[in-house]
Structure formats: structure tokens, C-alpha cells
Amino acid sequence: MNLEERLTTDLHDDLDRLDAGPGDPRQALVAGTRTSRRRTTLRVVSTAAVVGAVALTAGVALRPEDRTGDGEPAPSAPAGGWSKAAPSPLAPRYGALMVWTGDEVLVMGGHQDTPCPPNADCIAPSDPLSDAAAYDAETDGWRTIAPPPIQIDSGTPAVVSDGIVVIGNARNWWTYDPVADRWRELDPPAGVDAGPRTELDGKVYAVDGHRTVSVLEVASGSWSTLPSDDLAPALTIDGLFATSSGIVLAGVNYRESAPDEPTLTQADIWDGRSWSRLPRTGMIGWLYNWTGERILGLEPGGADGGQTNNWGRYYPAAGALDPATGAWEPLPGLDYEDRAEGPAWVVETAEGPLVATQGRVYDDSARTWTEPGIPDSAVDSDLSATWADGRLVFFGGYDRDAERLSNDTWIWTPGG
Amino acid sequence: MADQEAEFVAFYAATWPRLFRTVYGVAGDRQLTEDALQTAFAQAWSRWPKVSASDDRLAYLRRMAINAALARHRKASSRRESSVPVVPDAPAPDDDWLEWDATWQAVRALPPRQRAVVVLRYYEGLSEREIAEMLGCRPGTVKSQASAALARLRTVLETEGTRR
Image 1 (cartoon, each protein chain N blue to C red):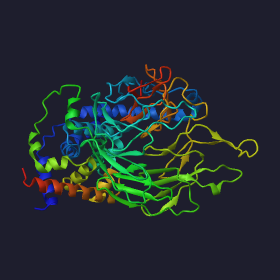
Image 2: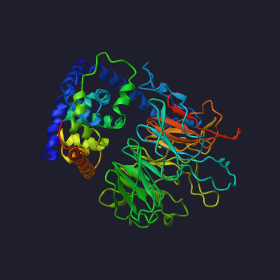
Image 3: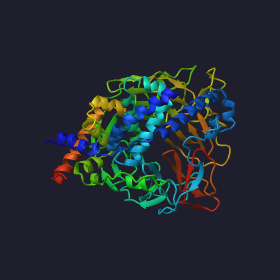
Image 4: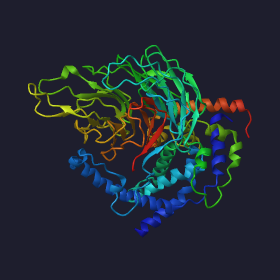
């Protein structure tokens, strides 16, 4: 019996013997009815969010309880707001690299010197640390993990693919398997010359300065390259996104700038057969985050060309690009004054439609902004953060008044 | 509405056992499987007129349940079970015999996406294209995942040497 025959036989023997039980259709009926009502209400709120941009820019956040008008409790909402996690085994620090594996939040490296104040002319930061720990939000427990083989901080390129962490730079790539607690050095071909940028379906992608997109198949460790994007004129290399529609290279084409219009963000897409150029967007900023449906750029502000070269209208820095259709649309709530109004921990991290930026949280599924504020903590700068299954987990940072680093972990759950 | 509800309950009862076994193969955990299936059935009920009119309701449910399971896939079963906040009404059926099955243990140790490919291919008998459509990836990805999974299984099972 060969392996495939054995799998067919044994899986049927094993799974067909399982006692599946009868299930409980009442649970599905109740939850499905609630979802249906919520969907109807959300549709109304989403429309109102576009029409009511004034309310949004005034800092009014839509909470789950605002979305239900039928007396139903907020659907599947965890207790919202802030909570403090158990003490970490890591020493106080700032600038740690944080990733969510799907099971745990990994906190790796960072710095232990005094962070540079904003706009100050500092010497270079200290060498990054090379220790790490994992936090399980379900059990509120920590475990120390195998130390990374290289010094790491929040600037180290990293992506997670099927639970495997891939980090690297132009010279060295490593994977970390949280289950085995093991780091493994990869052997990138000489041409890779870049760190990991994006992931999809078990493949990790990087792009170098010559627009060459390298592909690592994580399970096998094999490398390949996409055919070169030779579309002319070439775009700058501002973003690489592995999307369900294809591999997207975003940038601008400075040769196309015209006196009556700024240089607008564009994107080329590899659909598995060829490269093609999507229509020009209406934004001038970078694209940063793939939500699973759209690629977002969330820089506040924009430009109109000024008094001498005025373009006749205002071009936002931000926007959303649908790689499946090439359609672009602006995003609400991103004028210069639309930063967090109250105290805020400013971090940049995204998970699906949720993006934390400028001290606020944008939810692209509802097109709404929320201000988390801050918890009862004296830390006021240089925190690290990552999303973890819909929760925003912060670690470390610096208390500028007390001139003290922190190793506290705080968790913000939407809905509070 | 009552007719629709009766139709949904009958569909639920008819398909739950088969879906449970497939999703269990992917999730490797009874609690995760039930969570994923209830999520999928709830989604189906929330848009039942559309689902009930589809050509293959079972495939629709299977796709939603598999993807719900993959979204929760990395919770180790022991950790997940220990976090269940309420005591179940009845003791969970005894699946201990699975713990001693070499093939199942080798499949269960695969990364989630590879495990899904193996279960859908060798238990459900789906083609690479059907699996790709279900998992939202390209057939080539399914092929490479299957290849990696088989290589790992071959190593593990040949090292193990004997069956059961």
C-alpha cells in the first residue's frame, strides 16, 4: 500500500468512526438571526459614515452598541476597553519587534537605552537586544522562547506565514517555529537582497531595489522569482502586497507628473500570467496595508499644489485600492487635524481591516475611526504593538517624566 | 419563515455529521470543530434564502466551516479545551483511540493548511482545483502544499515504520 492509498484508507477509518453528535441547530439559528440584524444595521451605519463625515472628523467613534437598534446585545463582543497583562519575563525596553503567530504574541529584541525624543538630534540607538518571549492572551501567560539568532528591533522586516515567523534582511533570513521553539537559518539566493515584506498561502515575498520579487515557499524552503515587471515607465518601489488578486507592486511614476496634477500613486499587478498596470489612483501617499479586500494608505492630509502651481483641487495622501478591480476611493477622517484628540499611544500596526495609526484605530469593514485613549499608565512614548485576533497588544515604552523604560503589556479590545 | 427554519434544521441535521468529520480532520480538535461548524451554520442561516437556492449547499457550508476552522486553527487542543468557560452538559465522546493512530497523529502534526489539503484530498476526495476554490488559493499552491505534506508524512510514517 503506497502512502496515498494509506492516507485514503486510514483517514476514512479514523474520521468515519468519530462520534459527531447531533449538533444544536438552535445555536446557529440564534447567532444567524443576530448576524442578519447586525448586517442590516451596519449597512445603515456604513452609509451614514460616508455621508456624516463631519461627525467622524469631529472624533465621534462608532461603537458596537451604536450599531444595534433592536435591543440585541452587541454581537460576540468581548469585554471592550483596556486590560493589563501578566508581568513579562523580559526586561524593560522600547522598540521591540512584535508579531502575532495566530496563537501567541511574540515580543523580540528592542532597545534599552533612552529613546530619542521627537525631533531631537540623537546619536544612533543602542544595539538591539536579542532575547524574546511569547504571550498567550487566552491564558494570560508568558513563556521565554529561544533567543533570536540576530539582533532585532521593530525595524526588522518580519512576516508570519501559517504560524511560522520569517525575519530577514538583505543578507540573512531566519524562520522561527513557535511550536518547536526553534530558529532555522535560510539560505536566500544572492539576488534576494531584501527582507520579507508580505505573505500569502504559505509563500513569503520580498522585493529588491531592481524590482525583482523573490518568493520563499516556507514549507519547503525553496526560492523562486517572479518574472520581472518591465512595464514602462517603471514605478518607484513603495509597497509589495500579496493579495488574493495577485502580487501588487505599488509606487509612483515621476515621469508622469504634470503641471496640473501631482504625481499619483499607482500599482502594477502580477496575476500569475503577466504584469499589468492598474489605473492611477487619486492619492499622493503610500499604500501600506492589505486588509484582505483592499490596500490602504492612511497618511493624514494631502496637497493642492499651493498658490503658484495650484492643481485646482485637493489630492489626499490616503486612499484605498481594490486590486481586483483597480478601483480607488478616498478614505474618511484623514485631514491634518484628524489625529487623536485625547491622550494616545501612537503605533503603526494592522490586522485585516483594523489599522492602528496616529493614535487612532481605523476599521475598514465599517469605514469608522475609534480613539482607544490610553490606560492607567505613565508610559507615554515608544511603545511597540501588534494586533492579536482583534485585540491591540502594546508592550514596553518609555515614561518621559520618570525617565524610565517599561516592560508592561497592555491590551485594548475594541468595543469598550 | 417557519418553513425556512424547518428546512434549515433538516439541512443541519442531515449534514452536521459529515461536515463534523471533515472539519475535525482539519481542526484536529472537537471544540474547535464545533465552534467552526456553528459559525458556518450561523452564517448560512443569516443568508438562508441565498444559501438554500445554491446548487451545492453542502459545498458552501464546507467551505465556510473549513475556513472558520483555519482561522482558529493554531489553538492547540489542550490549551483550547482548558479555556472553555463552562462545563459541558455531557462528557465529550471518547476519541482517545485517535491518540494511538500513527497516520492520524502524523496528519495532525502537519501545518494547518497542509493538513487541510490532505484531508480534503484523501478524505473528501476533492480535486486540486476544488480544494483551491475552497481555500481561496491557486491550484499550484494546493499542489505544492500537498507535495510538502506528503514529503513530511512519508518521512514520519516510514520512520515510525509500523501502523498502529
